[in-house]
Length: 224
Ligand SMILES: N[C@@H](CCC(=O)N[C@@H](CS)C(=O)NCC(=O)O)C(=O)O
Image 1 (cartoon, rainbow, N blue to C red):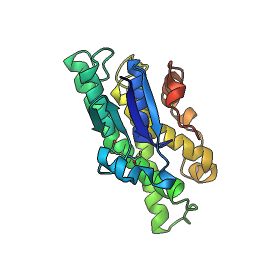
Image 2: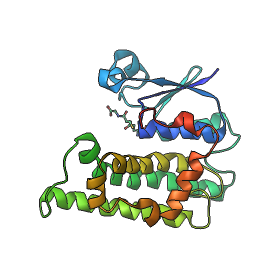
Image 3: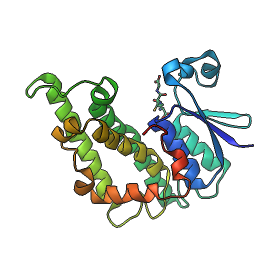
Image 4: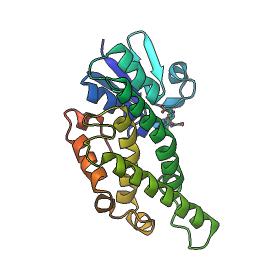
């Protein structure tokens, strides 16, 4: 039976699961929900996930919600090409990096990008409380990019030479920053994000490596 992933196109947390499936080389189908029509809040979808969020993954009779829950379940169900490592040492590093990215990288992204991409607000004037808060968020995101850059020195992926759950979680968060640079170049430039590939060359090479993986293009948001 083919694994089904319910998502909304461009949803970074659901993208994590699509990447995990791709890293493991497992076949899957995508069911796209239209967020603008509220399909992720429909009674039928709420039966699968009462929170009305994506991803939701189904494999036969099993339904799993929450992106990291899905990644962990995939390793339990399909142990080949593990996303969480072969050895206890690898597993420790992958889990800690995965959860650090879930906490700190995602929080930095929310702080930086909500007003820019979701609320569509202009850059607040210098010296205002709103601008100070955005500058603080930008510094937090630069710190997270520097953290990823340091992990990637001398390695192809965040925790070693093959892609793992940590890469599946971090990559969509990083691509979301890149999307903001594409959509709002002036604002992102003012916040120091115009030239991230030169500032963070290991992150840039890592992104290119993930882009080049077989099956990557099926995971990529349709409208980005
Ligand atoms: N912790 C959850 C978060 C899921 C989540 O926030 N999904 C977003 C898309 S990336 C969503 O469905 N948002 C719609 C909403 O909250 O109504 C996970 O990792 O799966």
